[in-house]
Image (cartoon, rainbow, N blue to C red):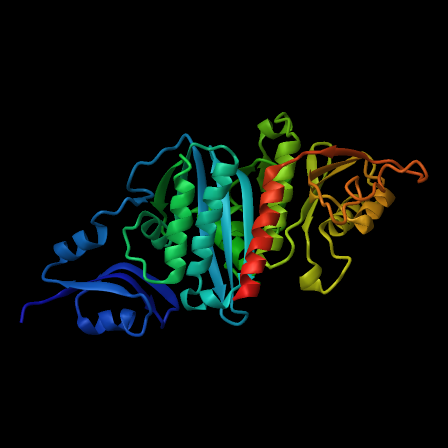
Length: 410
């Protein structure tokens, strides 16, 4: 009998608890070790190593970092995911980089039993979707998505057969986003090889699940420096690499960028989406002083079982702690939804100068829709209000309540 080679597109190494992708082995026994009992495993046998290698690479639109050429003059986003078996939660992380400057970091975690069978792949796919959404939200025409799980590319492009519900949903969502006219280039980067942006995405995922990391980012910063767009991005990195402040620099462009209300409202929307992932009403808020975001928060009422845990209340507490002062004079708040009476009262008490509101709350809005607490001549403080009428804020609320009605009907 002639010797056979087994090309494994997708498998799992249970001994080392890691994914197996695009691997060629020369015995059936070794192949079984990676595919037996693995849901969605993909493999095929060949008479030669060359044929096996051709099978793994045929038709793929995926490039490889360090091997292939890809655009350098556009937004680069590194994506990753992780999974905690004890909590049964997955996490995702995205690191947006432009000209070697980290301009945005986002990470989150969620528990979803329907995704248990794909473990950390859920986080990888979520990260890719958020990366593309971020690029579109910022008006990008081209984006390079770096990933270490090949399914990020192969499921999106249709190169791999889609059997799981999650990969089918991912394919539909990614193609819906890509049909908006943005060019997407997928580039594979090998995991845990010292690529700082990939390592940063990995450690932000682990942070969300309270999984210990190897502190690669902190060690890297001992001998290197990193440039970031703003203080918030710097703080995100310092959360996983404390005592590295002197190695992280704000870009000179940041000081003169002239952020406007749309930019800050976008950051509030990012917070609102974190609420949505945890099945909370999606409301997010940030507080800005001297052109910098000093605090950010999202609705945590359900998670904390606390009726006062609204985004506005939490962000005021964080800003006061940051400034070591309950008076938030010379500060502005950006919030995605019109504050309720409780939150409007807190804004008044904190002496916030100006409030930017994304969309109305016709049922309990206390800034003009139902009542107006912030501009009442009978009270001792007055807060300026700017209505942004941002469709992104209303769209996320509509999406949340639509999903909630759908879950209730199931």
